Amino acid sequence: MRYKSFLPWVVGLLAVALVGYWGYQQYSARESMRVYVGNSYQRAFFNVIDHVRNIEAMLAKGLVAADRQQDLELFTDVWRQSNAALDNLAQLPVSDAQISRTAKFLTQVGDYCHSLVLKTAEGQTIDEENWQTLNRLYRQSSILHRELLAINDNVTNGRFDFYKLAGEAGRKLGPTGRNLADANFSTITKQMQDYPSLIYDGPFSDHLERVKPRGLNNEQINQAQARQRAERFIEKRRGTTYTGRVTGEVEGAIPAYRVEVIPERGGERRGPAASMDLSRQGGEVIWMLQPRNIGEARWETDRAREKAQKFLAERGHKNMVARYFQRLDNAVTFNFAAKEGDVILYPDLIKVTVALDNGEVVGYDAKGYLMAHHDRKLPEPKVSREEAAALITPRLRVEEGRLAVIPDGVDKEKLTWEFEGDLDKETFLVYINALTGREENILRLYKTDQGTLAM
Image (spheres, rainbow, N blue to C red):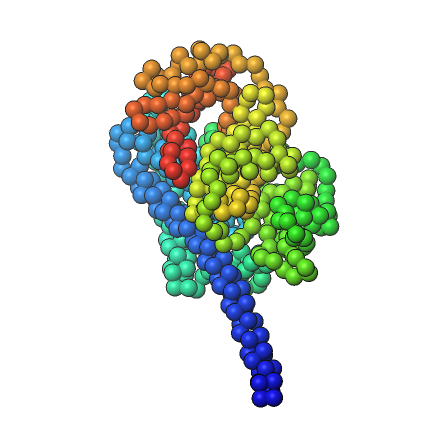
C-alpha cells in the first residue's frame, strides 16, 4: 500500500524531470542556432569594418602618391576592397533603406577608383579635379569608418545583437529589432547623404542608378500566391509539412513579400522557420535563408555541388554552371552562372549554400540573376579563340579559352574570351574582348581548401 501511495509522486517527478529535460534540450538548440546565426552576421559586419578601414587608408595614400605605378596599385586595391565590403554588407539583416546610401557610396568609390586605374594605365595623370574628388571620398570614408566602429562598440558591449534583427528562429522582425537597426544605422544613413556625387564615364554614375530588374515577367502576384510559391520552393524533409506566412512587404531594387515557412510534424512545429523574399512582380524567390545549427560535416564539396545543381534544376534553372565556391564552417556556398549554348553569362549569377552535415540547401540568393537576366542576342565573335590567346602575355601559360559575357557596369555587357592561366604558382583569369581584341579584365584566383575566390 505504501508503495502504491508513493507511485503517483514518483511518476509525477519523472514527468517533471522529462519535461524539464525536453525544455532544456529545446533551449540549448535555440541557443546554438542563435549563436551560429549571430556569429555569421557579426563576422560579416567585422569584415565590412576591415574593408572600409583599408579603403580609408589607401585613399589617404592616394592623396600623397606621386608615382603612376603606385597610383595604379592603390586604386586597384580600393576597387577590390569596396567590392568585398559590399559583399559582406549584403549579408547583414538590415533593410535596403537603412544601408542603401552606404552601399551606393562603396559602389561608387570602387568604380571611381577603377576608372582611375584605366586612366592611369593609359598613361594619363591624376589631375586637380580627380585629387579633389579623392579627398572628399577619403573624408567620407573616414566618417563611415568612425560610425561603423561606434556600432561595433555597441555589439561588443551587448547593446546591439544582429540576431535580433533577423528575428529569432525566423520570426518576423518586431519593433524592438527595427528600433535597434534604426538607432545604430540611421546615423550612417544621415552621414552618407552628403557624400559627393561622382560624374564620370563609369558604370555607377548617378544617371545610371535607376536600372530596373530584367529577369522578371509582368505578372503581379498577391500574398496568397507568394505564400504558395514559398511553400513549393522550400526543400522538403520527409514526413514534414510546411506552412507559409506572409510577414510583410519589402521595398528596394526588387519590391517583395517577406515570407516565413514553418516546418510542422504531427501538428507541432519542428525547427526554425525559413525566411525568404518573393518579388511582387514575377513571383520569383529573391533570397532564402534556412537558419539552423549545422552539425559535423559528412558531405564532400563535390557531392554538395551536385546537390546545389539539382536544387536549381528542379526550380527551373537548368542551364547553370558552378564557377567558384567558398566554405564557411560546415556549409559551402557555390556561385552558379547561367549558360547560353557554350557561352557563360556571368551577370546572371545565383548563389546556393549547402549544409555539409546532411546536404540540405540552407541559403539561396538570386538577386544578381533577377537584376541581369534577359533574352540576349549575342554577336558573333570577330576575334577567334586563337587570335585572342595570342594577345595574352607569353609569360602566362593559358588553357583553352571559352566565350563569356561579363558585366560592364549596370546596364552594359561585353562578349569576351575567358582564359585561365598560371604564372609560377599563381592563377589568373584574363578576359579578351571577342569583338575588339582589347584586354578587358584580369582576375587573380585564390584557391584554398576553403574555396576559390576571384579578385
